[in-house]
Amino acid sequence: MSTPTNVQIIHGADGRPAFVVLPYADYIANRSQHDLVPNEVVGYMVKEGMTAIAAWRRHLDLTQAEVAQRLGISQSAYAQQEAAERPRKATREKIAAALGIAVQSLDL
Image (cartoon, rainbow, N blue to C red; front, side, top):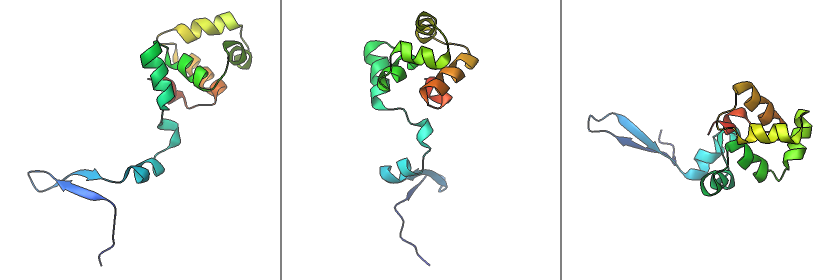
């Protein structure tokens, strides 16, 4: 039985499947939304030199004071964490929870 499909299989020189091509909409629909980073976040990081934490905060339209309050720390303490190039894993986990995003989104 032949079922229509939007998937194309590309074979390598050895005749074995090497690549799969599928429509972008299908690819996005089947991916977890937690591993997608909005273009705006990447733009803040590249164009403005922001850390991932700062870029996500700005994307979510939050102030440092708002995030600090969610974390139960001062704004100045949060500002130091946001500016750090590679904060500790535990810190990233707490900030991700405060921002409502997956911690993997901060590992850029």
